[in-house]
Amino acid sequence: MGAALRFTSGEARFLRELLRRRVPFMVVGLAGAALQGATVVTQDVDLWFRDLSDPRIRRALKVVDGAYVPIMALNPPMFAGDAVNIFDIVMTMSGLDDFAAERRKAVLVPLGRYRLPVLPLERIIVSKRAANRDKDRLVLPRLINALKTRQALQRKKK
View (tube, rainbow, N blue to C red):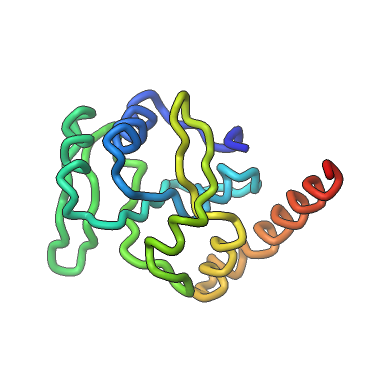
């Protein structure tokens, strides 16, 4: 796991800062699926935070010369700066339980000496089905195939 998605040194540093500071968050969406071995393409990394007002997020951003841009009119909150431009802030996840319940199910993917919490592939599939957008329906067969392959490999190991 984890070989399908590579972070720049600045991106990895931001994630490590969040982990070092024990900020409750998870990687979700297609980036989360890629970190679990799904062969998918995405242009961003979706991060779901328990609490966007957590001051530790701002401190982690400061380390990488990033900034938090709050909701403005119809624009969602976002991060600004070279090391954090790839990250999108997810406010809600369709079809899932609340953050705390989903976080307890997180898969931990190695990121140096840290472990990056990632929404399990099964739950990513549930969310994509619930969102039911065209782009989600298009990628669902690939995600389901990745899940079946992973499950078959796990059975084979037993």
